[in-house]
Image 1 (cartoon, helix red, strand yellow):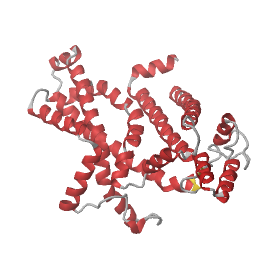
Image 2 (cartoon, one colour):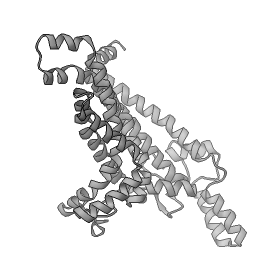
Image 3 (cartoon, one colour):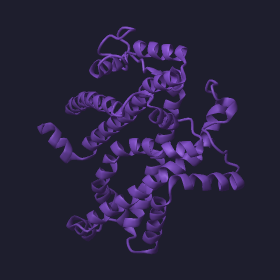
Length: 342
């Protein structure tokens, strides 16, 4: 019961935080002088294209860009009526992309679930690689196993993702026949889901998952190793050894549980970091994620598209943080006790 109460509290907190983030996002994307339509109108007037100016002026009125900023914000989130009534983020209307000349929902539709899929696969890769290597490096400290794991970790941190992507593309295609670019074969784009399409997506996921997840896995492995070594040096470990507990059981029962808390807490930062850090990788690999769209939107001041993508990343951050908090409450009795007291 207390857990459900805490989960409800965290959910309400997440929604309130998302509201504050929406204000910051809207303010930031409106910091540069002008906007997409203002810049376009200035160019059209300079070239004497009256028709284009009239269309751009109509769009400014249609999407309430001629109103004060505070009113634009309320209309954008759907808290105030605009030219089309209440129609904003709350109602599921993501706005219009002036750069692509189509609704934002049409641009990011498939890209959203593909972005989530790629980054969830990368997060899974991070944990599957970092957990055993970090434990092994700590258990075999100052041996060739530890030094080998450290070398792999430093290599993963030092190698730029885009360079790793190009190398894997070349050698993966040459020696293993892995596909180059994209997240599915061209014939499956826009087609309904099928076993053949799922197979194509899984094969195309191999290189992006490895590229995006490598640096995160390396950093987390080093962090887990440090936490484990700190726990292994504490008196209770010596006591357990003196009582004859086997090394494997000792490692899993006490030090790993204590060192696992920061590992779980990293979920809140890992997923959004993967999304934001994979923008360049998405461009290099030609992935159909929201990364390339965000770059284009920021360069052209396409505010509705940029605003939605930034809100999506913020939502991932808040969901990841909430999930990590709930898992920590379940894993650590001390945190659970603190939650009851609150």
